[in-house]
Length: 230
Ligand code: DC
Image (cartoon, rainbow, N blue to C red; front, side):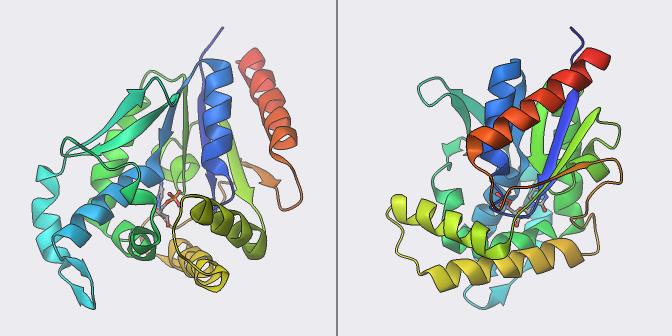
């Protein structure tokens, strides 16, 4: 059977990663969470005081970009790959609210996007991949055989994210999470370089009122149909 490229884009906390991961597993495809790459660079910038605490030194970050090594390493026990930043497992740290607060600013930087988009293109060169993010169907793989664009209302997304963070033991309020979701939506869709937008040929999936199983079944049947026709 022919292998295809599947691009899944959409707003934050629409459950893209969960679905993309599940789809990749059922098809036997590789899964790449590109948000993890932007988050890892953000963590690097925060640790070096290039961003956060009211300061910003984007030029210093740009200079150090060639020295930032990112790697996805599979964790057989968990069943997915974890993000390593210069050899250190940062999977947990990149998902915290402080990183979420700064990541959209870092993802606006042209040089950061160039570095990550080049890496993402290389990862998908043999197809058989499900990649999720914001610009996968528009910039990284404009020729992807299947493009999905996921949306849900800001409150539905904030509720999901809030429960997820509480479950991990993070002390956050619903209001902060909702504000972060709205803020990121705005920055992600208004930035100069590859803003978040639905590709013309993407299929839109609004999952405000849809359960995970229903979404997965719908997505899987779309993917199998496209693979069949390829
Ligand atoms: O998917 P996520 O919420 O983990 O992504 C974190 C941030 O990274 C998000 O606010 C926007 C940015 N991002 C991006 O600009 N382009 C991508 N392909 C993936 C993520």
